[in-house]
Length: 380
Image (cartoon, rainbow, N blue to C red):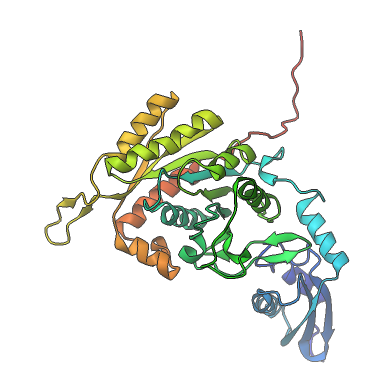
């Protein structure tokens, strides 16, 4: 008589299957509907999808089949998909959030997520390309990374990372799409007319949009959250300081002295908002001539150092130059194709510079600000 697959072994195998959006075992989050074992080693597995038309249904099915086929004596796996009820989705939301009220998880006691807001004095310095590539580098280090495209008017992160799919909605909670290991939220999916539709928001609406991106999105337990801020010192920069007061600023500039003047303003805003400027990144730095190998300063020289010096003097704290990224047209080309340079050309000088900067960010221990340590002062 042929051996019968063990149900407990099948359940253990399914415990290794993680939902691709939530990154937790399907056995822990109510997605496993049931297991039926039949003669001849045929196994039927019932799985609940969070919503009808779940974009990850094929991935989930493939993962279930692959895991169960590893169990001894299993000959065939059939996956039967169903959809969670409203009550099941509400339970899932409560399990993930641990609360029913809308709140920003990164400001709650116990959050150790490091938050970096990437700023610039003006557009055209490559801030979004730098932010996107840094996020991918950090994810490649094994870190859990989120990227919030806070440039509500000029959202370019989805195109740069090839993440144009809309988020999945679960009981009012947004499950952000992912690309290259990074969870991404942007204004783009919420515009019915697509990328060419303008966003006609004034100050209070911008603040509300940013607040919703932080509170209504299920980010999970992030190691690092990056925000791609719009250029300048306007509403979003101020709202970021209000909603995420412990976020640290990284200023992106070019070697051009004219660019550095306005970049300093983006950094000195931190003096008014009581934030820390973590450092300066100089983009479009010198690169070797393809003919003679001599460095070419296509966009000038010294801008990054000047910004760091002025911010150090103005803020009274050390503001270092985190790195200088050589000019490389492939950085722009990768952004147009949805393939970041650090993935398509990891040995390029610009990729190496970005990787070094990301290693510096990722090496810092997760902060203890806001954590309850279980101690209290005692008087004498």
